Amino acid sequence: MEYEIRNRPSFAAVEIDLNQSETIMAEAGAMVSHEDGIAIETNRGGGGLMKNLKRSVLGGESFFRNTFTAESPGSVTLAPPLPGDITQYDLDGTLFVQSGSYLAATPEIDVDTKFGGGRSFFGGEGLFLLELTGTGPVFMSSYGAVEERELAAGERFVVDTGHIVAFEGGVNWDVKKVGGLKSTLFSGEGLVAEFQGPGRVWLQTRSQDAFLSWLIPQLPSTNNSN
Image 1 (cartoon, rainbow, N blue to C red):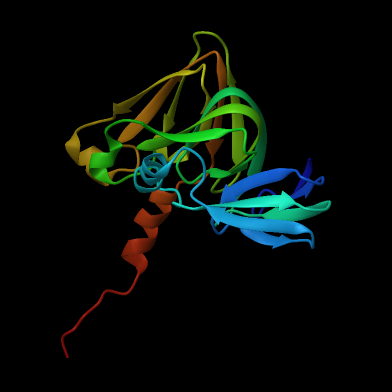
Image 2 (cartoon, rainbow, N blue to C red):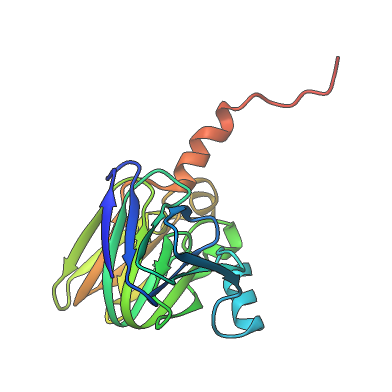
């Protein structure tokens, strides 16, 4: 399996070349195109009904996943729904990925949902993380550019939860509230994740929450009165 990430960092798409019988599993709606000889199957993914329902409802991911298998050598092109970049990671262990940043992985990788802190009570990003375990390539997407930060042992690093893409399983982490309740409800910096190395953390330079907070007040208000 080989791949090429094109059009980065603003409108990235990844073209994955599959040898015969190789398979890649992607989020529903991620496919841009594929060559002849690539078979597509839509299913619930691995792990059974309840596990996939939890992943869909709590993790914010699609209940279904598309499986692309090469009946003969060919390529499939994938892209995320938001403008931004794509990064690839060779997983050998555990990786936590922000809900919405998971794009694709090989079938050997198990995807589950892990609660990520109190953010769920306020409807923001980062409340549930996808826990990926196994060995193989993983493709992640970002809103905006993606940045990688390598933390030394004991090094601390604080990130707004809306800017997290992923972090390695060996990184210690905790979700903390910044300021009071008013700050948590109305500020984009109400909750942050505190990481402690060693390990790698991936960030995105834009936050979907922050963009929506800017966009919604700009929209025309609905007025039913004459």
